[in-house]
Amino acid sequence: DSGVTQTPKHLITATGQRVTLRCSPRSGDLSVYWYQQSLDQGLQFLIHYYNGEERAKGNILERFSAQQFPDLHSELNLSSLELGDSALYFCASSVVDVGGNEKLFFGSGTQLSVL
Amino acid sequence: AQSVAQPEDQVNVAEGNPLTVKCTYSVSGNPYLFWYVQYPNRGLQFLLKYITGDNLVKGSYGFEAEFNKSQTSFHLKKPSALVSDSALYFCAVRDLGGGADGLTFGKGTHLIIQP
Image 1 (tube, one colour):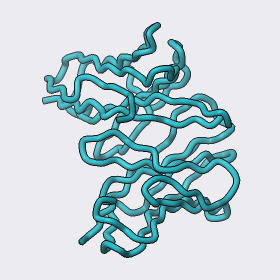
Image 2 (cartoon, each protein chain N blue to C red):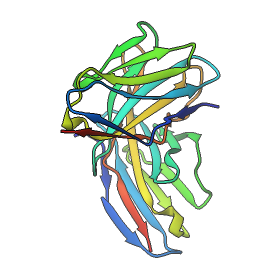
Image 3 (cartoon, chains in turn yellow, green):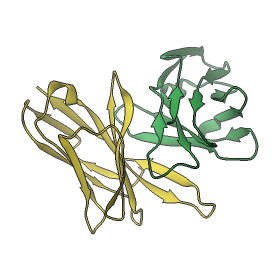
Protein backbone atom coordinates (compact mmCIF):
# COMPACT_ATOMS: atom_id res chain seq x y z
CA ASP A 1 0.00 0.00 0.00
CA SER A 2 1.53 3.28 -1.17
CA GLY A 3 -0.48 5.45 1.21
CA VAL A 4 -2.04 7.36 -1.68
CA THR A 5 -5.82 6.93 -1.87
CA GLN A 6 -7.89 7.41 -4.99
CA THR A 7 -11.65 7.29 -5.24
CA PRO A 8 -13.65 5.97 -6.90
CA LYS A 9 -11.84 2.90 -8.20
CA HIS A 10 -14.19 2.58 -11.14
CA LEU A 11 -16.41 5.13 -12.85
CA ILE A 12 -18.76 4.50 -15.74
CA THR A 13 -20.44 7.46 -17.37
CA ALA A 14 -21.78 8.72 -20.67
CA THR A 15 -20.39 11.10 -23.25
CA GLY A 16 -20.96 14.74 -22.46
CA GLN A 17 -21.01 14.18 -18.71
CA ARG A 18 -18.74 15.58 -16.03
CA VAL A 19 -16.93 13.58 -13.34
CA THR A 20 -14.65 14.31 -10.42
CA LEU A 21 -11.80 12.08 -9.37
CA ARG A 22 -10.36 12.40 -5.90
CA CYS A 23 -6.89 11.83 -4.56
CA SER A 24 -5.61 11.90 -0.99
CA PRO A 25 -1.81 12.04 -0.85
CA ARG A 26 0.37 10.35 1.72
CA SER A 27 0.37 12.10 5.05
CA GLY A 28 2.79 15.00 4.90
CA ASP A 29 3.33 14.95 1.13
CA LEU A 30 2.73 18.39 -0.35
CA SER A 31 2.94 17.48 -4.03
CA VAL A 32 0.23 15.79 -6.05
CA TYR A 33 0.70 14.74 -9.66
CA TRP A 34 -2.04 13.50 -11.99
CA TYR A 35 -1.36 11.05 -14.80
CA GLN A 36 -3.53 9.49 -17.50
CA GLN A 37 -2.79 5.96 -18.65
CA SER A 38 -4.30 4.74 -21.90
CA LEU A 39 -3.39 1.93 -24.24
CA ASP A 40 -2.39 4.17 -27.13
CA GLN A 41 -0.79 7.08 -25.28
CA GLY A 42 0.83 5.24 -22.42
CA LEU A 43 1.28 7.11 -19.15
CA GLN A 44 1.00 10.87 -19.62
CA PHE A 45 1.62 13.63 -17.13
CA LEU A 46 -1.39 15.91 -16.74
CA ILE A 47 -0.76 18.39 -13.94
CA HIS A 48 1.24 18.98 -10.76
CA TYR A 49 0.14 20.79 -7.60
CA TYR A 50 2.32 21.72 -4.68
CA ASN A 51 0.81 22.90 -1.41
CA GLY A 52 -2.32 24.15 -3.09
CA GLU A 53 -0.70 25.84 -6.05
CA GLU A 54 -0.43 24.67 -9.62
CA ARG A 55 3.24 24.05 -10.48
CA ALA A 56 3.22 22.54 -13.94
CA LYS A 57 0.90 21.44 -16.70
CA GLY A 58 1.48 18.63 -19.09
CA ASN A 59 -0.81 17.20 -21.74
CA ILE A 60 -4.00 18.26 -20.03
CA LEU A 61 -7.03 19.13 -22.13
CA GLU A 62 -8.90 22.38 -21.56
CA ARG A 63 -11.96 20.28 -20.64
CA PHE A 64 -9.99 18.98 -17.66
CA SER A 65 -9.12 20.93 -14.55
CA ALA A 66 -7.72 20.17 -11.14
CA GLN A 67 -7.25 21.74 -7.76
CA GLN A 68 -5.56 21.00 -4.48
CA PHE A 69 -7.35 21.90 -1.28
CA PRO A 70 -5.97 23.20 2.03
CA ASP A 71 -6.02 19.67 3.47
CA LEU A 72 -3.81 18.72 0.46
CA HIS A 73 -6.27 16.36 -1.18
CA SER A 74 -6.72 16.95 -4.88
CA GLU A 75 -9.55 16.62 -7.35
CA LEU A 76 -9.37 16.15 -11.10
CA ASN A 77 -12.45 17.37 -12.92
CA LEU A 78 -13.21 16.00 -16.37
CA SER A 79 -16.04 17.62 -18.32
CA SER A 80 -17.77 17.19 -21.69
CA LEU A 81 -16.47 13.66 -21.64
CA GLU A 82 -15.65 11.88 -24.88
CA LEU A 83 -15.12 8.21 -25.63
CA GLY A 84 -11.40 8.83 -25.92
CA ASP A 85 -11.23 10.01 -22.31
CA SER A 86 -11.68 6.43 -21.17
CA ALA A 87 -8.47 5.63 -19.33
CA LEU A 88 -6.90 4.87 -16.01
CA TYR A 89 -6.19 8.05 -14.08
CA PHE A 90 -3.46 7.95 -11.47
CA CYS A 91 -2.42 10.41 -8.89
CA ALA A 92 0.91 10.36 -7.14
CA SER A 93 2.29 12.21 -4.19
CA SER A 94 5.93 12.80 -3.61
CA VAL A 95 8.49 13.20 -0.91
CA VAL A 96 11.88 14.80 -1.12
CA ASP A 97 14.53 12.92 0.86
CA VAL A 98 17.43 14.40 2.77
CA GLY A 99 19.51 14.28 -0.39
CA GLY A 100 17.00 16.45 -2.20
CA ASN A 101 15.78 13.57 -4.33
CA GLU A 102 12.09 13.30 -5.15
CA LYS A 103 10.28 9.96 -5.14
CA LEU A 104 6.72 9.42 -6.32
CA PHE A 105 4.17 7.17 -4.68
CA PHE A 106 1.21 6.20 -6.85
CA GLY A 107 -2.37 5.49 -5.97
CA SER A 108 -4.18 2.49 -7.45
CA GLY A 109 -5.95 4.65 -9.99
CA THR A 110 -9.49 5.40 -11.11
CA GLN A 111 -10.64 3.46 -14.15
CA LEU A 112 -12.90 5.75 -16.16
CA SER A 113 -15.14 4.26 -18.82
CA VAL A 114 -17.04 6.66 -21.06
CA LEU A 115 -19.84 4.94 -22.97
CA ALA B 1 11.97 18.49 -23.76
CA GLN B 2 12.45 15.09 -22.23
CA SER B 3 11.42 11.74 -23.65
CA VAL B 4 11.74 8.04 -23.00
CA ALA B 5 11.63 5.11 -25.40
CA GLN B 6 10.96 1.53 -24.49
CA PRO B 7 11.48 -0.26 -27.80
CA GLU B 8 9.87 -3.56 -26.80
CA ASP B 9 6.15 -3.87 -26.09
CA GLN B 10 6.74 -7.32 -24.64
CA VAL B 11 9.67 -9.35 -23.39
CA ASN B 12 9.41 -13.09 -22.82
CA VAL B 13 11.92 -14.85 -20.61
CA ALA B 14 12.06 -18.34 -19.16
CA GLU B 15 12.10 -18.59 -15.39
CA GLY B 16 15.63 -18.68 -14.04
CA ASN B 17 17.12 -16.91 -17.05
CA PRO B 18 18.50 -13.38 -16.94
CA LEU B 19 16.21 -10.62 -18.14
CA THR B 20 16.74 -7.20 -19.67
CA VAL B 21 14.11 -4.56 -20.32
CA LYS B 22 15.42 -1.78 -22.50
CA CYS B 23 15.05 1.96 -22.06
CA THR B 24 16.62 4.95 -23.81
CA TYR B 25 16.06 8.54 -22.87
CA SER B 26 16.53 12.09 -24.04
CA VAL B 27 16.94 15.15 -21.82
CA SER B 28 18.57 18.51 -22.32
CA GLY B 29 20.44 18.40 -19.03
CA ASN B 30 21.44 15.68 -16.61
CA PRO B 31 18.92 12.87 -16.28
CA TYR B 32 17.08 11.65 -13.24
CA LEU B 33 16.00 8.11 -14.21
CA PHE B 34 13.50 5.71 -12.71
CA TRP B 35 12.00 2.28 -13.17
CA TYR B 36 8.49 1.54 -11.96
CA VAL B 37 6.52 -1.71 -12.03
CA GLN B 38 2.77 -2.06 -12.37
CA TYR B 39 0.93 -5.22 -11.39
CA PRO B 40 -2.64 -5.80 -12.63
CA ASN B 41 -5.19 -3.44 -11.05
CA ARG B 42 -2.49 -1.68 -9.05
CA GLY B 43 -0.71 1.63 -9.16
CA LEU B 44 2.91 2.00 -10.14
CA GLN B 45 5.49 0.89 -7.63
CA PHE B 46 8.96 2.36 -7.43
CA LEU B 47 11.77 -0.07 -8.26
CA LEU B 48 14.92 2.03 -8.45
CA LYS B 49 16.36 5.36 -9.47
CA TYR B 50 19.58 6.87 -10.78
CA ILE B 51 20.75 10.40 -10.12
CA THR B 52 24.52 10.38 -9.95
CA GLY B 53 27.24 8.01 -8.83
CA ASP B 54 27.68 4.37 -9.75
CA ASN B 55 26.31 3.48 -13.14
CA LEU B 56 24.87 0.24 -11.77
CA VAL B 57 21.92 0.92 -9.51
CA LYS B 58 20.37 -1.77 -7.32
CA GLY B 59 16.68 -1.70 -6.51
CA SER B 60 13.79 -3.69 -5.11
CA TYR B 61 13.08 -7.40 -5.73
CA GLY B 62 16.60 -8.10 -7.02
CA PHE B 63 16.36 -5.72 -9.96
CA GLU B 64 19.18 -3.49 -11.06
CA ALA B 65 19.67 -1.00 -13.86
CA GLU B 66 22.71 0.16 -15.74
CA PHE B 67 23.10 3.81 -16.70
CA ASN B 68 25.05 4.36 -19.90
CA LYS B 69 25.55 8.02 -20.66
CA SER B 70 27.11 7.56 -24.09
CA GLN B 71 24.22 5.38 -25.25
CA THR B 72 21.62 7.38 -23.27
CA SER B 73 20.27 4.11 -21.95
CA PHE B 74 19.02 2.83 -18.63
CA HIS B 75 18.24 -0.85 -19.11
CA LEU B 76 16.58 -2.82 -16.33
CA LYS B 77 18.14 -6.20 -15.50
CA LYS B 78 17.78 -9.15 -13.22
CA PRO B 79 20.15 -12.13 -13.12
CA SER B 80 17.46 -14.78 -12.60
CA ALA B 81 13.81 -14.17 -13.49
CA LEU B 82 10.87 -15.31 -11.37
CA VAL B 83 7.33 -15.95 -12.59
CA SER B 84 6.21 -13.33 -10.08
CA ASP B 85 8.25 -10.72 -11.98
CA SER B 86 5.63 -10.82 -14.73
CA ALA B 87 4.21 -7.29 -14.88
CA LEU B 88 4.26 -4.03 -16.82
CA TYR B 89 7.49 -2.07 -16.43
CA PHE B 90 7.87 1.65 -17.00
CA CYS B 91 11.04 3.62 -17.45
CA ALA B 92 10.80 7.33 -16.61
CA VAL B 93 13.05 10.36 -16.87
CA ARG B 94 13.17 13.82 -15.49
CA ASP B 95 15.63 16.57 -16.35
CA LEU B 96 17.52 17.38 -13.17
CA GLY B 97 17.73 20.97 -14.24
CA GLY B 98 14.07 21.12 -15.07
CA GLY B 99 11.22 22.65 -13.16
CA ALA B 100 8.17 21.13 -11.60
CA ASP B 101 7.09 18.98 -14.54
CA GLY B 102 6.23 15.43 -13.72
CA LEU B 103 8.23 12.49 -14.86
CA THR B 104 8.02 11.51 -18.50
CA PHE B 105 7.24 7.83 -18.80
CA GLY B 106 7.87 5.35 -21.55
CA LYS B 107 4.91 3.40 -22.92
CA GLY B 108 5.78 0.40 -20.82
CA THR B 109 7.06 -3.10 -21.52
CA HIS B 110 5.12 -6.19 -20.64
CA LEU B 111 7.48 -8.69 -19.04
CA ILE B 112 6.28 -12.27 -19.20
CA ILE B 113 8.21 -14.92 -17.31
CA GLN B 114 7.40 -18.41 -18.44
CA PRO B 115 7.63 -21.29 -15.97
